[in-house]
Image 1 (cartoon, rainbow, N blue to C red):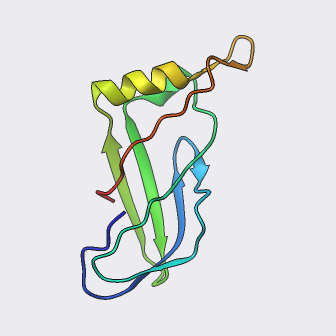
Image 2: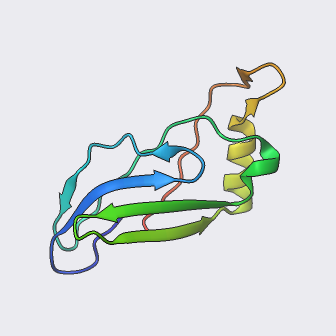
Image 3: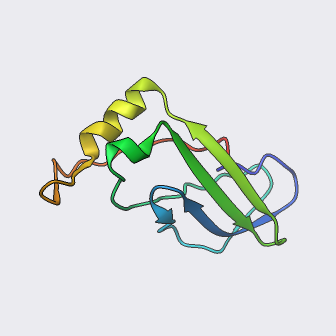
Amino acid sequence: MVNSGRSEVDVEAAWTNWLGATVSDLPHRMKGGSSKNLVFKGLLPPLQYGGNIITVQVGLGSGRNVLKQIRLNESQQGQLSASRIDHHDERSTDGRSATFPVEEV
């Protein structure tokens, strides 16, 4: 994520609808014009529940929350499909991960 303002911003927490809380080291103080990568890890939901939108919520130190929905393009959706869990036998299909930029939060 990017702090496009001039003042510092405290990032207290971050969460996604699919993967839960971030595994990134938080809280983190972002200086004006700086950026921070937020990492989320977890099991993806079954294909019928996934859709093509990831919702990211970021809690700021001011008590405000920023909520952003990120629409996945076809390539990103394909990456997710290849990384999904086979829920019939509860095994990972291939152990691959998917990485998506969320600078727009």
